[in-house]
Image 1 (cartoon, one colour):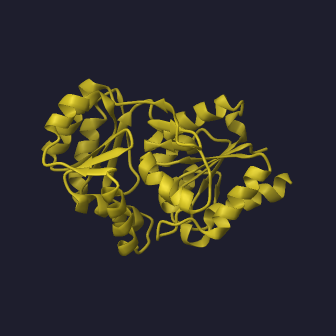
Image 2 (tube, helix red, strand yellow):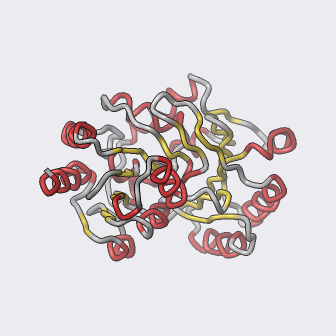
Length: 288
């Protein structure tokens, strides 16, 4: 019996325009009415995640930044797992050597050298889901966070790293050069304290080795007295693999790569066609 559902955001619960469909919303509310815990499990920061969830009429807890941060429904911090300070300069040196642009995530803030790169990140995520990006909606969403002070553009990260290097949750690297990304990934994997994942073909997500969705979902389930056999996870990309491997039931989106589909116990429809809602409805019909 499923007692907890963990759901990814981009390419999963979010439609290409970054909204949550009525069907997805209704399915989640029905799950909650039937005493099933539902939690968001995303690579996004809390400030990036809360807007679409609240706009969709939902009140959910959050596993953010691939598990580096966990917050309750009110947004209060439950746990935080930062990259070890000594690793930050090693990470940035590797990314710089392979000419990979990157963003730094600290608390609810995102630091970038280019707002354009921040917009391009979400365009890449949509393209990774084999969909046409809703560029105007993406630009509006990012610029809203810029205006609210959640996205900060810097000319250099040096001072920030010197002052707050031990507070960094995630480093997010992007590049159109696949060879450079692959070489950087191999170099980063030699650093034992890190977890290296990806939410699309053009990026690298770098966190503490203990900051992975699978670990965070398992810890969250344990805090609720729920066995992983009674957990269902829904996702579409490589940063979802760690939770797919641990859950009793794992659902791949129809827009997921073949490798992700092969790792899951079942496949639903795409995020354009309410795949999350349909997967949850199937569980509810069976359990009710």
